[in-house]
Amino acid sequence: MSETGPPAPVVVHRVGPERAADVVTVVHAAFGARPVLDPPSTATDETVESVAATLAEHRGLLAVSGSVPVGAMLLEPAGHLLRMRRVSVDPHAQGSGVAGALVGAAERVAEEEGYDGTVLAARAELPATVDFWGHLGYDELQREGTWLTLAKALPVHVEAATADDTRQLGKRLASVLRAGDLLILSGDLGAGKTTFTQGLGEGLGVRGAITSPTFVISRVHPSLADGPALVHVDAYRLGGIEELDDLDLDTSLDEAVTVVEWGEGVAEGLAETRLEVSITRTVGGDPTGEDDVRHVRFIPVGARWIGAGLHQALA
Ligand SMILES: Nc1ncnc2c1ncn2[C@@H]1O[C@H](COP(=O)(O)OP(=O)(O)O)[C@@H](O)[C@H]1O
Ligand SMILES: [Mg+2]
Image (cartoon, helix red, strand yellow):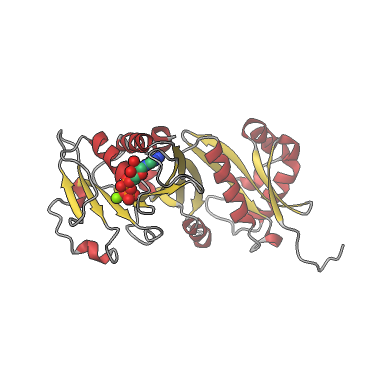
């Protein structure tokens, strides 16, 4: 094998104590190369025994390039979140996507095992590291001295076989919503955005039928109890989000749950905190069918959704 050839692709494995020696080697290499902080990291104190003990209980991830270990992390449950610890990339392998591959693998593990999201501790003295997590969608949950707790709520994917299932999904989501929440619904015309919103309205207990308005772009449905109102905006025909500002909404959005029905793929770059709900038809499904499977994907954006119970309510 040529030493100057391109590096072998990075593969991430879920590992137990049998790989403790490899994991500890990568952790020592990564943390040994970092500037010494105050208080110093305890990662370099890890031994094969201490890592093996953690791996035996919760397992971890090992990234290899060819047969060479280049990255590692330990995984630990933290309530509804999966905690990533000792996130390590060998300094020689930095900049080759190892960290991103590890985090992607950890998020998949968390999703498969039904966690709400992932969490980690980072040090404010390492701004490049904090930026890295920010780019991956991690938000600051808490700050104690220079210790930051960063977390990300994970998407939830559900199939709705019938129009009523889609309505029930909206109703179940309503149980975790509160005033000030913004939902962006995307999907083609007829995907089921209004159907979903009807369930939301039912769950929130608001007044008035939720329909697809022909001329009216937005409608306020006041709560029948003392909960938040539902502001329903059909922006399908709106030119852009700026036009939303021109709408004369007499209810403050802070006091309502706001739902915007939107076309495909325009939700990006809206409010910093939002829940994106994307509804798609099954390829090859019967477009005229009364009850036809929809894929509903909930993508939480912002710290608001961490620990909000989305997964429990929807999955
Ligand atoms: N699984 C499903 N989920 C939602 N709607 C469905 C489903 N199967 C069939 N439908 C039908 O598709 C249509 C969806 O319409 P609507 O909710 O107004 O879509 P949109 O608001 O996205 O344009 C309704 O006629 C509904 O009965
Ligand atoms: Mg609609």
